[in-house]
Structure formats: C-alpha cells, structure tokens
Amino acid sequence: MIRIRILELDLAVRKTFAFTDRYKLDFRMDFFNFINRANFGFPVRYLEAPSFGQATGYCHTRTPHSILAKVHFLKRRADEGHPLP
Image (cartoon, rainbow, N blue to C red; front, side):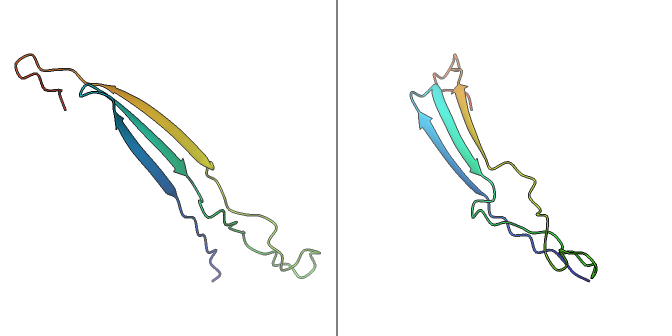
C-alpha cells in the first residue's frame, strides 16, 4: 500500500494590547503551511501514460494566512470597581 506523506506546519502569533483596565485589543495572525512545502499527490501508475511516474497534482486545501483583530470592552462591577472577566 502506498501512502501520501503530507507535511504542513502552521504558525500562529498572538499579542494582546491593554489600553486601560477596560479596553483590550487582541491581535492574531495565522500562517498555514508555514514552511511552504508542496505536498504532491500520487504519481501516475499507468505504463501507457506519457506522464508515467510523475505526480501531476498536489494536496493543499488551506488558505495561506488569516489576520484577526478583536476589541474587548469590559464592564465594571458597581460594587467593586474591577472589570468583569
């Protein structure tokens, strides 16, 4: 049995900026297949085919990157003066 070897390494970078005790900004960047390695499919197995032994396709279904920014507005408790979790 022949098995396709797929290698993908993903990288995520996240940073939280706190402007005050009530306002935060979460910033996140995701990079999929970070090492940019092509994962080739099965080679052609028919002897009569002109592309015999060559991998004509590749296996890659993910988006290359994504960027996310989220703003948090925290409420204060009336009795304590601390922000809610």
